[in-house]
Length: 192
Image: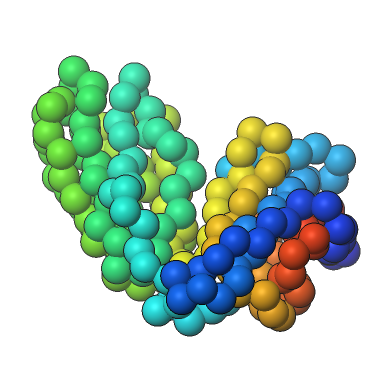
């Protein structure tokens, strides 16, 4: 398997961190072959205490007999809301890898929660609606992002330096490699 890592000098900006030290917003792209890879999760190995947790509480919504978003990335220790915004009952569960849980049957208008307390991939399903599926990737770092529909991503507030990166997409192998993060460099990933 060949992995392409391109560092180009166009897509990073420097901002000041909380202690006044410079940090970089690392921009990049994810591709599968020649196509952009939407919803790829990209993260850098770094100390889990390096940045505060996100202020917005993540949610995996159930609406129109589907999960939204289909791919969610969160830090270890994050509580995720699972609101049922359908007019039917759902039973959200995960029995494979990652966090194992079963929220039981619950009606529309109800919200249940799960704390994702260790890193890994959780495959999420509904016991009643077999076509419903989603993924929650739990990472032990403050530096992560999910690519948009054009395969672009931004990992905000990274101290310049050398990092090990990881990238995951549904149906593909996890990519791992080394990257130098500094102003003017981008991280461009490609699955074969």
